[in-house]
Length: 485
Length: 140
Image 1 (cartoon, each protein chain N blue to C red):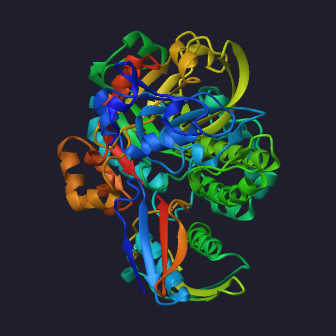
Image 2 (cartoon, each protein chain N blue to C red):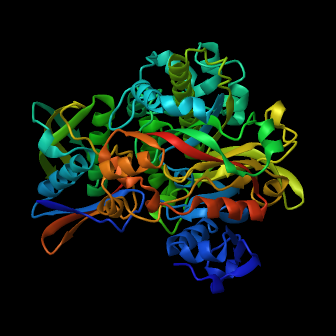
């Protein structure tokens, strides 16, 4: 566990680790946490965030958010920005599940209308959105179409009847990141990904029907900007990523970077921190392939949402437009992107890695869709399937302090094996039903592994980020129906 | 030929250690561990077979590529395997393997975790006192 006394306390929710902490640190590390969260963090987070601070070309600080926990190379809940010329790109700073992210849609339904139909609704969505080991999606695309998806993501969906007109503008980067290069994607990655559009996957991925929690409605004025107008309004949240496509690109380039390290004379403290200069051939190739996976992930969540709209329409005998099932927002939490930020007294393009961290752009930023621009970017933070999730908003302080980044979720505190020892899936399913949460899971083991007790307290994570001022709470969302991959 | 899980290595994922008196047996143990993570092997049948060949490469790379290929077979062809026969030529750095299994049947198979990838964390093959050992951490 981390020892708070070893670090410089900046505020009641932030700590700095100076460059003198470890030989080779190019910048200090900063951790956002209450003393309790900090002392509860595994020591791997401190080791990893200070390893990241040693990477070539890192600028300003290496960050660990309040939900930080040990990951491969970078901690999960980690943020680091790099100079485009002198800096590196690292698959370990993104994760295997490239553009794993969160998507939130609203409805104009209130919980009393949905409650009697929750089983019918969840059962239908479970059939329409395949989840679990080795599943394939219903959307079949040709190889040339898959190339277009890699390049244009949700824009492709909008042009091919798989999105509403205003969907792309409500996705980070307008639904696709520029710079995709499908020629840098392996045959195996293509084969793994082409049949997986519209699938949820497994692990901690989920699709949840939620209700705005009246007791945790923090800012109703902001909520209205995002189309949340009722206290028991129903929303739907989707958490998943680029499936086997992104996983294979991660695996492919981990091998490439293992060799590139020697070529460029780079030494890192952990094999999973393998990296290459962003300006090198290997760095550019990985970026081009990684962006393909990010755009596939946007598309995957889009196709899933189309099926969710279809399910609501069938169950409530109204078209999805009449149910006002608009996208509130879609954000990545495993990605690296070139963004323009102010630091050191000037503005500059930097490569921002966010691994288990969410973009949190403040009011006025041109990349925020026009209806939200005056208030800031919606930030979606997912909790465990038992404890619920949060909608927050990005802030100017995040732009000043963290390259516009905040936390992403709650983070595990218990291994999968230990969780299964503590609770059986069927027993958990029944307990959740007793508490008003109807769950359908691809496997009972998978359900037990994702029990709420295996995760940190999300409220404390969200509260910390709110107090730090790098994202502000809007509403809490309570689960009433859950599909677990 | 055995494997054991290491539950404290990666909280969000699954780690295991495999060992055998022979290098081929150790590769087979790793493959069986991956199967055990994805499905209850007792519910699988050995109805069809697939051949694999890799190399030349070092032993770490051969194991990484072999295990990754099993994950790819699960996603691309919906195939899970329960029996493995692996021959490794340590001098030439090559691997030949055959695996027997069947396509995923959601009614009959007791499915478990969907494996995303083999990670490099703690990854490696070593010979300790005449026994071959490997540590593998899978991203789930």
